[in-house]
Image (tube, rainbow, N blue to C red):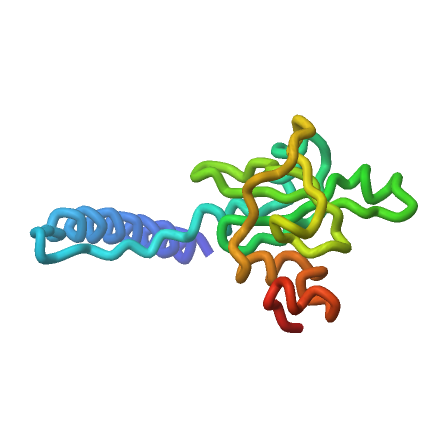
Length: 156
């Protein structure tokens, strides 16, 4: 029993050394020239940041599960869901490069377009920034309602 514990410790120790060495060798062997670019495969920050925790921070209270598409997302405060009889608004967020920020709230049963859903910013002014049509089709169900398809171009 004691001998197998030493073997495992020895294996882990060798593995850690090997990983450290190979990482250092890989980093040293990468060279770039203007003609050559090294591609990185880092996860998209806005997608990895699409969590209840991050939207709760943006809302200042507990959030429901967000729905994120590209640079845009929708989510609702949990308290809003629990305390409304007929919820009519949806909160709209935009990725600012480092975090999801609340752009405003919009009437969820109208199309999400400049001429559609009544939307207001957190300070009460009219929302003046909307997602591109392809994103709005994905995050906003009303854009695919039969009566809105001619306006939005979305299909079900």
